[in-house]
Length: 99
Image (tube, rainbow, N blue to C red; front, side, top):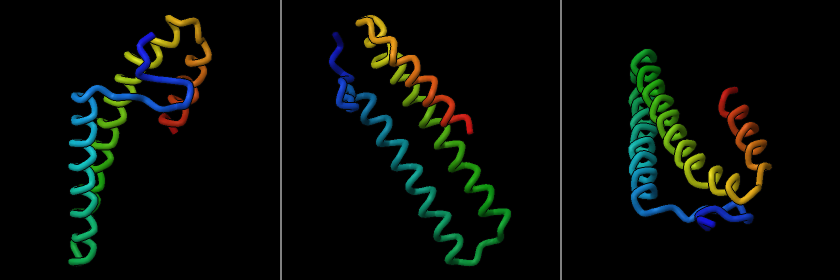
């Protein structure tokens, strides 16, 4: 058993994955602060909307990476160990992401 994912709903991430996710979140956080600054400085609405669209795209990219890592570690590990409930959990997660 891989032990990266456990029954307590936590995951021990490899350093590379951790750093990549944190780096992306830091960039997204910076983009959000930039939009806040644009509001404070009375920026033109379409300019703000373009930046918000970039944030949405960055969040979608973050989700794709996190989902891929989850499938390649937790999901595969649990299926190999006979835990098929993880498939239902994954399906429910995908439904939430596709709203």
